Length: 404
Image (cartoon, rainbow, N blue to C red; front, side, top):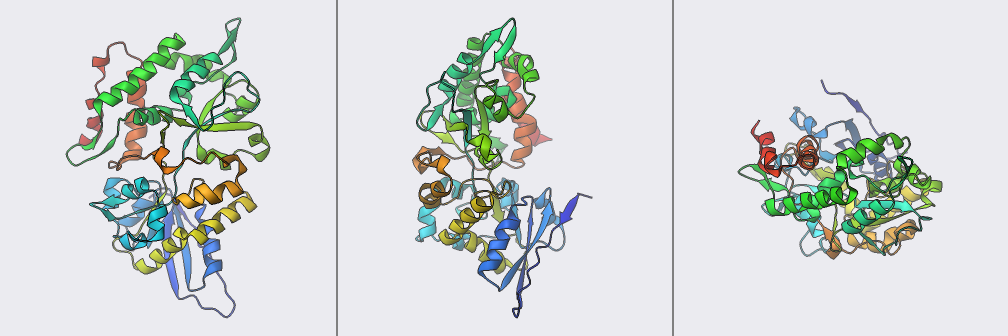
């Protein structure tokens, strides 16, 4: 029996009777903060929030919830379980013009919108504001510059590291980011469940092999030689000048203490001025057997409105909520909010919000994408760097995951 905690957000309105209850299952506690705002702006509906580690499993029960909000909603096998919601983003409407189309595509099957992306994050290279050994770029921290600077910042004395530039194995997500920046394009495929571009995947492996060559040791060996220095959060090591650079998802901006952030700076990881947004995307879907589909749509329409998005931003920054900053600790799915409103609340993002043309979006996610990436893809990419003969480790080995 899967562990879960039921959290019911109660609303008491004097002289007002609630007419509709919307049951939402999520693994994101931050939804409580948004439900508070939702209840304050209307009194005809109330959200009943149920917390579950794996919200999708709640759809297998007899009484399906009205709404699922989680980071696995966009996986192909889950999209098929949701109601069509094209009317939430009409083609000729203002919201569609502002919505990132690359995100919208992730919620579609055969051009029918089945799930609504609610946020996204960006891979972010952090460094100290006082670091005068590197040239700070305007917006993009290219992967080539990351190699150059990470090696430059490695300093040893008496066979002991005085400072470490950056080790990609400490945060293995970078292997996924860079393979996609080279155009690996991992995507859903009807035949094998997943497909990718072999040539471009090989280019990304060559990139990391070049990193190893310049480092004059295997990346895994470098990790083993430096892991003992990671005795504090990486951002703290940067402030102590023990670590030069570190790759975080942009969601960390809402979790690092304010006094620490004041001495840090960041830029977006990129290649050829393209930033891959990654796969940590929270999305919402209305189950096919939901009882209150209209109520679920009402909440999603409220969330999508420009007025509501501004309210969410204002509230999250006023309260400095570490679990509900921004939009589920990410960027808005609306361009106008990110480009014109967000920098007013977070001065660190002033002149740093990339326009849509600079963003590279994932391809539609394969079934069980999250499990596949963490248990198969990332270990495979790292192991591919640890062998001398590339033929010993073929990309087709990854397909075994979907055959089991």
